[in-house]
Image 1 (tube, rainbow, N blue to C red):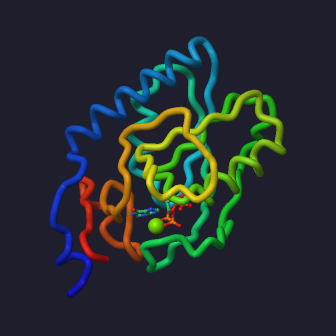
Image 2 (tube, rainbow, N blue to C red):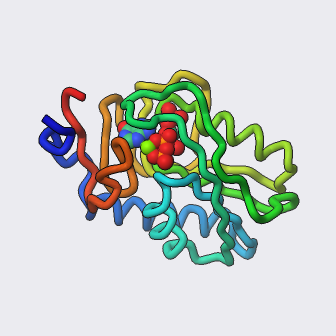
Length: 177
Ligand SMILES: O=P(O)(O)OC[C@H]1O[C@H](OP(=O)(O)OP(=O)(O)O)[C@H](O)[C@@H]1O
Ligand code: HPA
Ligand SMILES: [Mg+2]
């Protein structure tokens, strides 16, 4: 049996996702009124979310990406964060918002947050579509959160299992992986 056979229940529908992304865009636009924001997308998982989020933001926005990986084909973190691609733009003196698809153990964000702080942004916030609260292993909180969940592995809307299922328009809870 593959993970596709276990793709049983929609946890977050495309309609709910769209509504939450719109809300997050408005919150960010309100907090940074009359200022320019720099979004930093954490690849690969955030690529669909950030594409929708950036269009829901009404203030001037620039975007850059980093690529971090720690899950591989597993459903829990390896605890080893691989930096595979760095920023192309300087962040010093900018209002920066890190954009994640999910905060799970928190290791990825903790690692990235402190690395970016050293580069002296004017402000540094975190926006995540999903906050998997029950699995946190380090203390890190997002400033902007779409949906919260406790536990379980999810796929779709950018979230993968072993690189597959990122293209699903809804987010599914995968049972018994
Ligand atoms: O809070 P954590 O336990 O660190 O988990 C969250 C991170 O894990 C996933 O990335 P992954 O390593 O799967 O790479 P991907 O984005 O390319 O899928 C996800 O996209 C987050 O970046
Ligand atoms: O539940 C998840 N699904 C996909 N990728 C992830 N990375 C951390 N948690 C998850
Ligand atoms: Mg992944």
